[in-house]
Length: 444
Image (cartoon, rainbow, N blue to C red; front, top):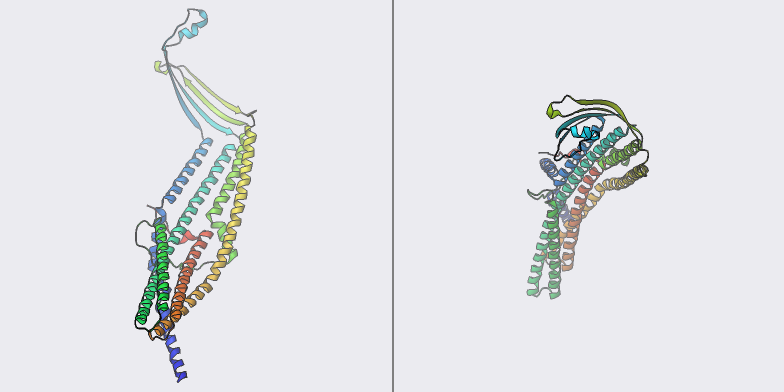
């Protein structure tokens, strides 16, 4: 007879396990393929409309304009000067020494045209153009980094809200179960089947469950506030955006991808290159400069005079002494180049360390998820049996309350693991620079 009861118990346990694993809500929190595509479009729109993205775009346009301005120094410079004078008051003595002054007209208008073209400056102007080209590429990489940053933060806020909404539902159910347990104990106490201390213990656990619910709702409110920074309108999410593509979890391969695609590294490379061109520009600027100049001046054009001067020549300029300014500029440029080099090395060292940790965590994700799913299912079964035994009045109250607490802790751990797992994937994609490949930024 005892053996028959054990067989019945094992069959019941198997049925319960199948039901739990196939119908449990926490294990079905991921988006469908259609929902994931809608999520990608929503995230892309959110990033494109975010003020920080538009600010970075404006900064890139400003840098492009600066580049075009530096290129102008290599092209001819054409100027026109209109010089118009009217005599207000004149007084001269009638002497031969001031004949020229006394013969000048009371009104005269002169027009001067000049064309200047750089002939040679030891590459100073070209180095400045190259410096600005590198700064433009650095600014473009900065914009790419801003896109990846906004993508990651918006996705993280999405995952946080979905996770907290699911956890609020779990804690609400737990609170309702604690309330039901307390009511059952109240009935037992009223009928003399239980001691008063059991009721007080049930009331204490109910209060703890309500406090937990209040705390979780508060956390949900904070996550919603952060979510609205990126998604001002639209429904709140309740499903996790499971990343559907295979990830490269080999550290060497990941590092190669990061070095070639991470916008922070690309930006640092271009900034270092710009600092090198600046050093060359400063050194060349202290050397002589040759310019071709064509100049023509028409006199008294308002009187239809045909008098004019027309000159052409080559100008040679060289700073013999600048009071130490050139030496200071050279020292500054060299120091800035050294700073850019060290900043890049520090960035690479930091990102490489983050990548190692990220790859390690990615490789641990499957085992972590399986462990917490197993713990969750085991505690759910334990909770089910405790409830059934309590209904038959054969369970100890403390055991029932403990299984409720264990189940709530297991649910929280599972939700947090699911949340952290998806965030880890998107964090890794941001780190290697491939996060933008999945999401299309929709521009107006």
